[in-house]
Structure formats: structure tokens, C-alpha cells
Length: 100
View 1 (tube, rainbow, N blue to C red):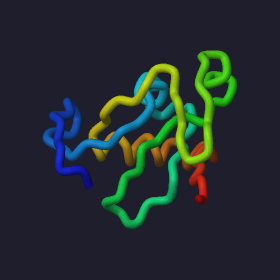
View 2 (tube, one colour; view 1 turned 120 degrees about the horizontal axis):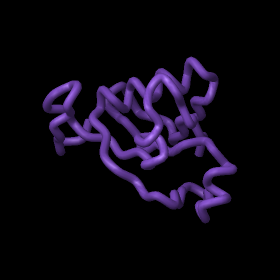
View 3 (tube, rainbow, N blue to C red; view 1 turned 60 degrees about the vertical axis):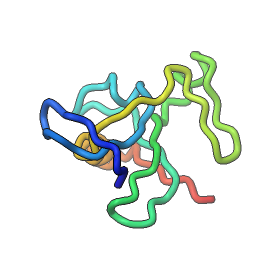
View 4 (cartoon, rainbow, N blue to C red; view 1 turned 180 degrees about the vertical axis):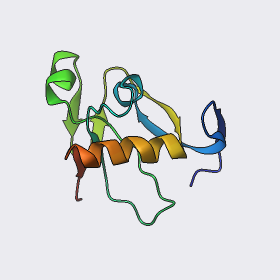
């Protein structure tokens, strides 16, 4: 987990994770998908972005070999909120882990 922390209104003081703002703007249990590279354990929360290609394309974002440009940028989310958004995406079959 990150050593940096934030104060989450719902979960209190938590370590932070980075996700695209499109994920943050979508309120649970709705999902815009959840895409990341593989984690190396439970405490390794990789940067995540939405899987909405139409959104990315219409707003100038693109995926480029190992790097993702998201039009609205990335922002912090507490680790508990990160895990909840990931679970919502799993339930909706919109969780993707990109290998290599």
C-alpha cells in the first residue's frame, strides 16, 4: 500500500490509490469498468482506469503500450473505496487485468 494517506469521509484515514476520475465520478454500485496491470499481492493496488473505450476515444484519451492517457486525469481514492469499485466492476464482469 502507499505510504501516503487521505481522509475518506466513509472509511477514515486510509492509504491512497490512483484511479481515473471517470471511475470516481461514477457512484457505486454503477461501474464504468476497472482496468489495471496485475498486482503483486493484496497491498499492491495498481493505478486503475475505466474500460469505456467510447468515453476515452470521444474525450481524446488513448491506451498506448503500458501507459494510459485518460482525458480527465487521475485522482486519489482511498484504498477501501478502490477495493469497492473493483468489486462492483467484478460483479458487472467489467474488471480487466492487462498482462504485460
